[in-house]
Length: 123
Image (cartoon, rainbow, N blue to C red):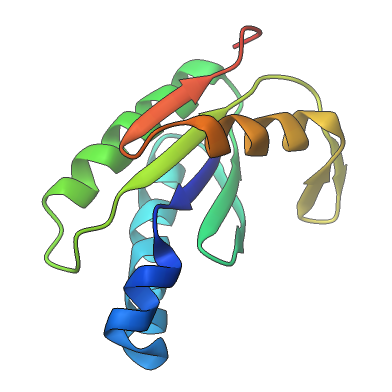
């Protein structure tokens, strides 16, 4: 599962880098908690986005639903997310994942509209 903050550059320019960095850090902490509660692994953050892995697609979908709900009621700046989910076997090296399964999830996230979760046909 990939998440990406919509218009993060615009938000950063309005808020300033220091405040925006703090907000993104809090956002990632919130996502990590939800992901882990749904038995997922928060693999890494990538600029304004995240990569996570789940043992079952249904858990990723539930995490995505909960993430969207959580950011709606957040006290921070109004953040919208795009989320993409793809299912498959990735190559795991240390605490990271590689291969086409990761690339497909990232591409799916980029075509989702703000506040949407898109899934691949495989999922």
